[in-house]
Length: 309
Image 1 (cartoon, rainbow, N blue to C red):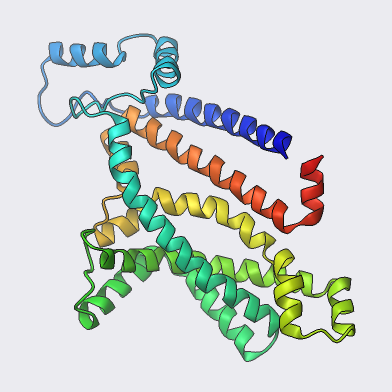
Image 2: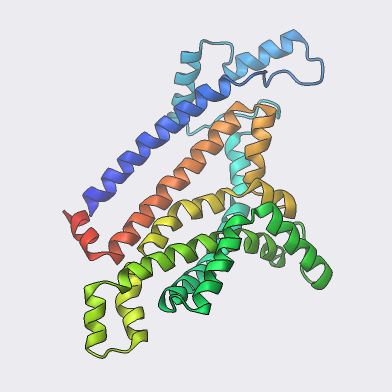
């Protein structure tokens, strides 16, 4: 198990290095300059800004300087257009909001999607199965910018105790978390249904039925562990995506999370902020995938044996 974890961590480090390297060169290939805006900036001010951030040096020196600051000093850099504001400060300010939104969204997705998929698989080709599949398909097809406004309008007209925008109280978490959660619940429902159908046709399940075991016991004690493996594999990157936030959802409900910074950084050509957000998001993906792999190993005895070796 330790060898497996170390191997995945090494893969994660290589992945993060490649991700940051590609981002570093791609953002500098973008047209325009972050040191120029609508206001007329004197040339000597621009030169001073470029010297401070190292943009006046050759590209390979900028690359080496960025990684030295990142690894040695744990410094992701400063925002170019906001003096004295570091990238780490922007992430630290918005991440707690995105974390709360991501955890709440994932809880909704799991509580709705997994039971729906399991019930649909157990009641295959019945009206319950068709209903679950239809609702899941609607959830997959409808984007967040459609579901979000519908929930906001419905809550605004019928529920005075829930704010449709802002992030000042726990009740403000409900609508954005419900929007993100229901979208992912649709995927979880289909994955859970597919995994359960495959397991329910295995020989050991038929043997358990032949012994006269109760169907509920068969599903909960024998089929559920293997049937949820596809859903668990999906949970890793999905959870990281929820934590990073959705710019559309955050814009609709005025949530001050990380998602807004992705688009704003690209619009303002904030090179260091883009790199920092990509690095942080990649780190979340690596950690979430590692946890998902460990969860799959816990659910699958064969995989657990291969991991142990």
